[in-house]
Length: 284
Image (cartoon, rainbow, N blue to C red):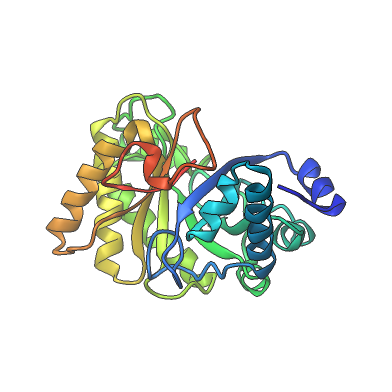
């Protein structure tokens, strides 16, 4: 891609970007769903894509990133900490900058950082599409333990994020918090909120109970649509569990999944090439 000096300095100043993602967007929709925020295709990026395709044709080269953009695939990224308004404007408006959407992190149990809070209007005003992320409880390679109520209460006084909180009761409570946080940020009803589940070698039963309860509670509240942000290593099992939770709730829609890939990222590949075709709608 071709960026201005301002954008290059912005990139250099914010090396905490975790992932750059291709996602297939429906026209007028956000991350993988008609209920999500409008990604609003950038005029600057569209012109840049056209130029890149023309230049590639003249030189006999390929322009996969530009081709995918023109065909309705949009580039986005997510990063732990809000990069700053000037940086976000530079990434959106710099000539040739391909970004159309960004992950928007709600304060959550395992993401205490609140730097994205209050930025929705600002980002949408710039034309950014927003994929809302809620980082729930994680296993971090450990097996959740059942703690006595007094022990768990003591642990909660020190942290909101612990493997030992993982379970169905916590999943339902975290869903209620995700709804409240998204509502407080002004996100429209029906938008997808993605539950971030980090990579696990094996998914413990308590974690399965946790995310199924989170999904079921999200459906029951009727405010926002539940989505899952997970690694391809776990995607098939989690998708099967979540699909069952949808069915049990009488919801006939396919669950929305944002799937993190492996080490073979290529911006020229389609999101579905992540390797989990049935649940896939995104790729890292």
